[in-house]
Amino acid sequence: MVQTSPPRLVIRLDLSGPSGLERLGRGKIALLEHIRETGSISAAGRAMNMSYRRAWLLVSALNAMFEEDSVISQRGGKQGGGALVTPFGEALIARFRAMEEKALAAMAEDIAWLEAHRASS
Figure 1 (tube, rainbow, N blue to C red):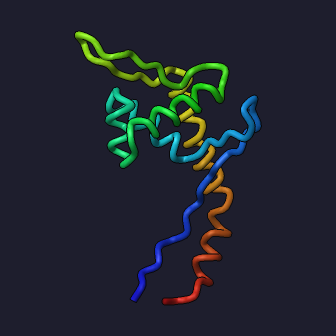
Figure 2: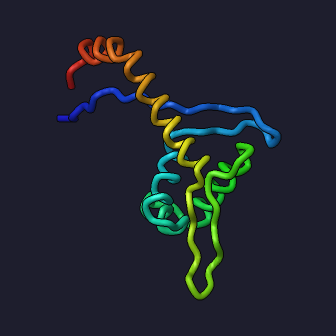
């Protein structure tokens, strides 16, 4: 018997930019949250089961997407490297999560209707 999970709303914003279509979604926002928690792009990538290169490319894309950087990094040295989510990055996280909440609240009745009419497994 296959268990069904409740429907979930997934938001992704497609923004046109100088390098073509740029996407902002839950993956990049989650990466920012992990960087905030760990202070490291590498550790954030590991927490999300992605390579350092992939995490770095996503951070680079985020930083290129807006006028202000979302993450600043420091190369290794005596104190070691690290990464910091900037105030703009913190605002980006907060705004994106607020958009998710607003969209979910606006669609709650429709989502409940869909769930009530789903076929049973």
